[in-house]
Image 1 (cartoon, rainbow, N blue to C red):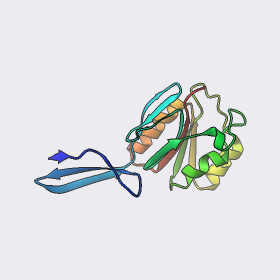
Image 2: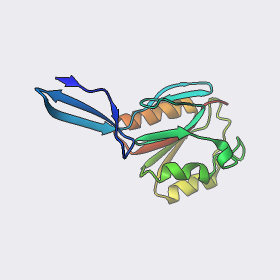
Image 3: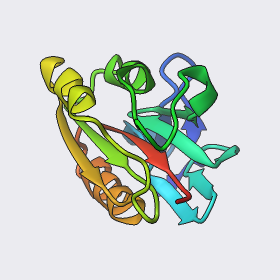
Image 4: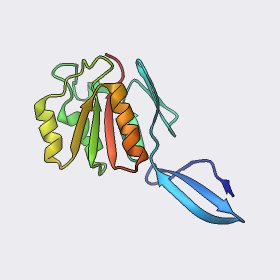
Amino acid sequence: MRSSLPTQHPMRKLYTLIFVKDDRRIIEITGHFEIASLSWGHMKVKGCSSSYKDCKVWPGGSRAWDWRETGTDHYPGVQPADLEEVLKKGIDLLVIGRGMSEALQVPTSTLDFVKQKGVDVRVLQTEKAVAEYNKLAGQGAKVGGVFHSTC
């Protein structure tokens, strides 16, 4: 049996790994990859050529989390507008990483906004948030996340 290298699905930005035996496709796995590395000011998502300072991830995709888009700062913290894109990806659970020293605030109003969308939310220090996200993604959960990689 041999396997192909992961390839990106053209429509869904999901990655597919195909196993072939005797020139017949026997299994095809499509899903999302977890966060491969985290250090101060730097995050890398498996299957993505970009690296991020802060990032948003969801099943099948990721992108930089640019606070300037919504005027976010450590205080008052994460705004509903920061989360809308990820919430629209059909997730059941959102993980928020508050930074290495947990300097990024998450107002109660933002948590209420997520819950009103029918999505559970977990707010953790970023290293713990990444570990939680990776564990859930590895279990096949419909999980998304926003992560701050510095203070």
